[in-house]
Image (tube, rainbow, N blue to C red):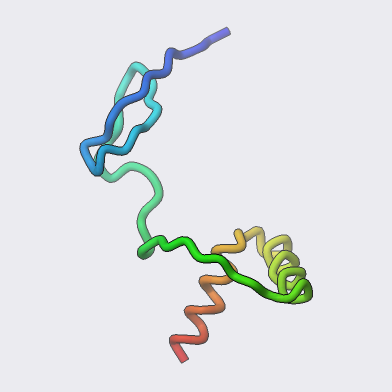
Amino acid sequence: MNEKPIKVDVSNKEGQLGFVFTKGGLREGAGRKKIGVTRKVSLTLTEEIWEKIEADCAESGSSRSEIIRRILESFYSA
């Protein structure tokens, strides 16, 4: 097997830990680009609405977060 050793390294931003291979390391600007501020919320909806959201997720291949974000952005951009 071609196993590469993995090490844990500390990023130079915000003290976040990351897994890196022995070659290379954490790179500035690597990873998913930020699209906004993340805040955790709890959302209570009817089972019917959750089913519609899940159906939209399956149909579009999007996450719940993406679907709900699109709904909110559409509502507030109008």
